[in-house]
Image (cartoon, rainbow, N blue to C red; front, side):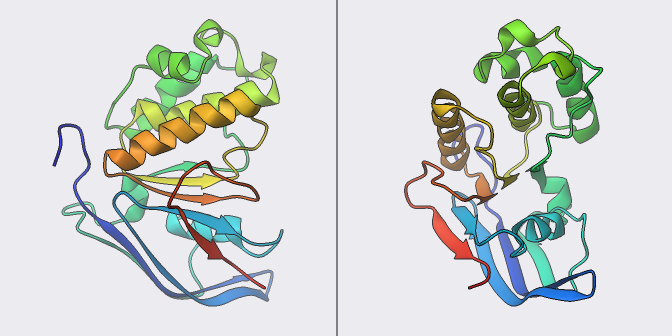
Length: 207
């Protein structure tokens, strides 16, 4: 294991089922995701991509099946080993970009980059003291993605991570994801377009 790399683990999902509002969204969904691997989660709108991500991070209970994280030692739950960047950015608009990241780091633990360093990586060093409410949609998305860098967690669960990003920012994110995989991290990303990751497997929900 190289310095700074994650210990090997494997996410194992078996026969998952999801109902929303009494309607069956998907069933018999099984897959695995191990250290160093990436999955591009695809499917039409309403197929259940966001619901699956919510299940994996512990926000939604499956209506069938099981989710297991193998090899995580004393912290077997995936929620304690994952970062979620949802379709909504989850930022406090009255707080500055730096304050949002400092709050996230305090809650998540496993401190990695300082907020100012993370913002510099995503090209927002100049916005550290600006309230998030003043930022554009693309800038807010980059602040949300910077949360991946302030706390160190092996599983990245991303819902439309390229949304609102321009071409340069998409390339930046692709580079961050490649670095994360090289360190033994794992990524599952719901997407309607390419992630810029060679070797990412496709997991399609629905027809």
